[in-house]
Image (cartoon, rainbow, N blue to C red; front, top):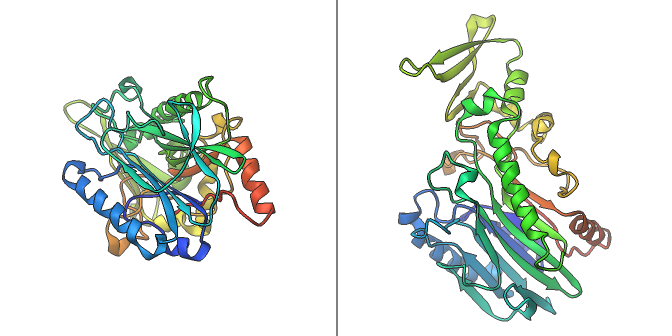
Length: 351
């Protein structure tokens, strides 16, 4: 069972109801945005998780937390956690340095400097991939596993975000889409190069895939009139205001660098947001290399960080399916075969 999720929302009830044999949890932004002050809470969370009733039957654990924020060159803030049920036999993990599989025994937690850990590959994207950000934490972590006679890679990934709604709106597809495409291509090339045997792979985490902002705005505001507000000193576009032609010229949408305030955000939740899947096109250029099960949940971002409004979207970005579980064609075959056999080997689930 695969979960791309944030620390603090671990789905214990799902584990107890489904009782999976192999659990993979991929976290991004470990420690949160204020990681210097909050990183200590991550260790507490992991300890509580390992001692919880839901996890007592998982006697082998591997936790990899990239917590060394003082190393700007390597810090990705990624966390990869793997839990193996006591009934699961014959499970091995790949040693990338020794180039061989090793039996998984006991519970081990790795943090700080992951670069010296041979049981994973970790890379941070080159700085020139996203020059707007003086210090990006984006990158990926790969682990490889062998379950019986089936070997597969699990890749934790965090791609670049949209820095400005205005810039995302100006061009279709947006400039940010191209940056993510370049970074994802880099990851796929790395995990399928000639250094190691090619195996089925699952890539899941925060891809930051966004809906085509230009097309979404045109769809939502097809009958509205647009007002452009510019900065006086630079003449740059500061905000876009879309008003109804009638009905007292009510504001339908206001767009700013970090504001996407639409009059009725319920449209993104209706029928799991199916109407907007037509604008979810960033994965199309990888259709020969990456596959996905049917999306049956509403956009996963940007939900409110206020626990009392957990089902509401923040008015910061256009809602989108940022968090995904993608896989190679061979990995999808494994999933479909296991589902057909009614005994899942790996079952991707979003939480």
